[in-house]
Length: 492
Ligand SMILES: [Ca+2]
Ligand SMILES: [Ca+2]
Image (cartoon, rainbow, N blue to C red; front, side, top):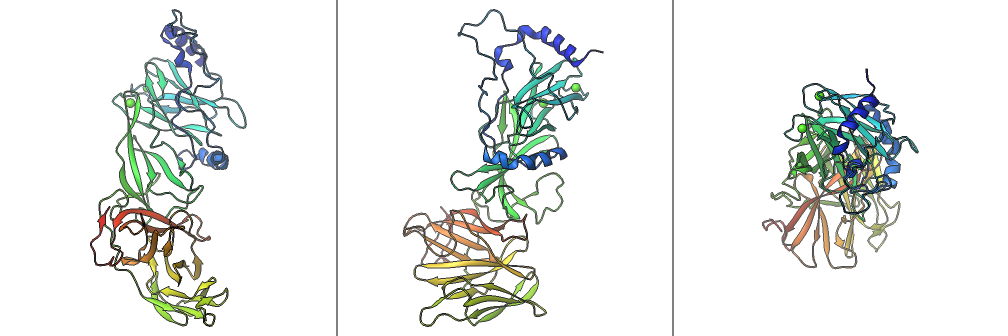
């Protein structure tokens, strides 16, 4: 029986006169890499976790475009077409293939072919390139592509059918980089040109200048290739502190004329509340909200919940099916309308008499809204307001079990009532129907046009830590500030 090298030599000789210099270049790399997770290959979970920090810290490790580096063969010395083609040099045929062969019908003859990933030896764990090769059952030929590698590992992902050729296309997971898609074309594997956006990335796409990131996922469902990008950015770095329900833009992919073609994005929601068993697939559901930033529906923002209880007052409320008593205890400083640290506490008494306390920070005298803020997935909290001067500072105190925890807020979207920076541009935060917590920010001074955000509780991974309030952009609405509850809402 001939060895792979024997077959390779024969194949190379047979088609040496077909090969152009560019055939030896590394296949195209689709855009800059970012980060990782959501993997179907068990071995890569560990590898991805190990590589995560390093990848985020150094996201631009490989060249994009044609990969024009010293690794590429030199171009012809002039634009004159050479009359003699250079000999085809094997690249990576002797690199190790630690994962062994995957079976996939690359040539479409109905018989699975052996597919391997060979890792270029190098530092710290692997070299800068991979060789993906397939031994075709139809001809016995060995076909391959050399592409850029990730940091630690690579493996063949699911096979996909993206065009009308019967052969299946390969997806290649590379930690820290976008997925590579490889297609058999003219007896070699090629990487179709990918658009800059959306990405074929499992990980975080950084939002410039904010320290936040968008979540990007890739998956295969019944031979079709999909990806999504979250509509909103979240705190991170990874895993991002995503809420339990949030909108994403889903893209399906095809190949046409040597290009990866994304479909028009479809708005869906990641929803771990209603989708409890999705297997390896992301928990996608129709969005229950009014349509979000890219929709056309109008959310029910008003009337605003206006019930307030001040220091010394209390009320009953139902949280997660339990009736609790909520009180603001303490006293304000004489004549100033302010409190110092330790002067005031939010006290929640649970059935059976157990109490939990949250100390109100120094500031204006507090009041608490009598209607709780309600979040998808069962989260709930009370809004403590400290109003004075031009601003109202707000703290959302969540009830988890028998504990009170103040949520964190950060980022560009302000929380509370006041003016943005030194401008006269207003922002206002309120609890609307169904306990939804909203903030609206005037687009210009005095304008009715307001950007509206729906707040969600993020950080579902680390239940022991404080949640971060994550703003989901609902869109722009014209709101008459003098009487917002009675005027019809229109999208800007
Ligand atoms: Ca085959
Ligand atoms: Ca195909």
